[in-house]
Amino acid sequence: MKVKFGPVTRIEGHLNVTTVIEDNRVVDARCEGEMFRGFEIFLRGRDPLDAQQITQRICGVCPYAHAVASSYAQENAYGLQVSHNGRILHNLIQGANHLYDYLLHFYQLCALDFVDVTAITLYAGSDPDMVKLRNWVKNELASDRPFPAAPFLPRLSGRYIDDQEINLQALKNYLEAMEIQKKANRASALFGGKFPHATGIFPGGCTQKPTVDLILKYQSLIQETVNFYRLKYIPDVMAVAAAFPEYWNIGRSQGDFLSYGLLPFSPESQSRRLLAAGVLHEGRVDKVDFDRIVEDVRYSRYDSASGLKVRDGNLQPAPHKSNAYTWIKAPRYDGRMVEVGPAARVLVDYFTGNNRPLRELVNQYKALAGIEPMQFNSVLGRHLCRALSGLLIGEFLLEESERLDLGQPGMQEIRIPATGEGYGATEASRGALLHYIRLKDHRIEKYECVVPTTWNCSPRDDQSRPGALESALIGTYVEKPDEQIESVRIVHSFDPCLACAVH
Ligand code: NFE
Image (cartoon, rainbow, N blue to C red; front, side, top):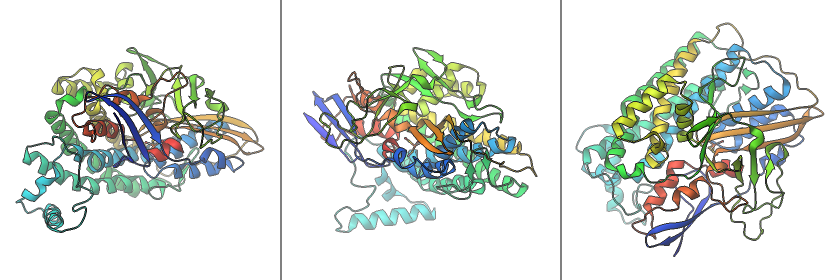
């Protein structure tokens, strides 16, 4: 039987998923991106320095990743040598955004797939926020409104955590996580100017000059965020894992893993990063080569040529194309499907083997959970990878902020050449993000973005092979085929952002 669920809620944007179920198993799955945007078209002909501003509007969740990818691409196109402060400020802004985004994803978008929110009615403590939540839920449930206690209820049927202490603790942290997200956003706004769309990020750095005052404020906000990761977020992920250990084996994608690496160490080079870049294929990590990336469109609503390299990208919308089922293209690396995102970042770095703090953290938690590293390719693996890597990112940001050169500017003069081209690659929260810019007469001749959710929610490629999320859904046992809480948990573990995917 065919079951379509969508638009999927608690994700960003418009995603439908069509599954075919036989004997309670998903035997086919299709991800359908339901929107066209066209950023690559309307960037043509513009001033190149508009790009890091306009591409931030691709998304309200990961805007700084777009600003930074665009800045890197422009630095490469202009031959711009980035200053010490410039690179650090990019890192401080982008890193804080990851810390905000992982919390939003786990608590507000995913936790209630596992945590029993009705436990709040049993709350007998005196925490004012919890009391407020309890009274609100009780009043809602007693009302005759059509959807009382939305967005918590109604919910999909299935098993939820049955230990009420754990549920109540998770709900308390659900509320606190919103306050911590504000702090992480304030931290990035100190240097970027505002959240979500920063005015201060440019190729070569950031317009805000670092001062002692700003650095101390930044450190205090990030320290609070790091404490929350250590004391609440990681334990909550492990509590979910203890209640649902089967999800270490559910939601496994069937391809390779790609990461461009996150947070460059030195101003002179974009290549040495806190989390390493690479393509993980059969246990081996290879260097990334952008020329090996192509975008197929056989099943996408475009009639431009299929299999084009990034620098040759083209976008001719064809809303009525037969057999096409999505506005998302199908990027492939070396002809293969890859998963991008938190598990890819951690696995690529782990198998590269040069990052001792990450290796130790991963080894500690895989021993606690009783899993093998490749089981990070799962629903729980993606959740845990966000939490663990977030802790390392936060600790790195605290050290990185100490390295700022006081009294020195965060920016430098930018000269835009008449011609030139450049790639800019970074890791957005949801995974590998690539921007490409080509100049003509000092203007943008071509701009291309290959975006994390485009990889993860890609449709079939030209050989009819599924994308990462499609492959992770196929084979899943579903207790209730018409509801599929198991499939929804898989979709949520990827944290899809359709606004980005269709850009
Ligand atoms: Ni709209 Fe984004 C991230 C990017 S995902 S959230 O993270 O780039 O495709």
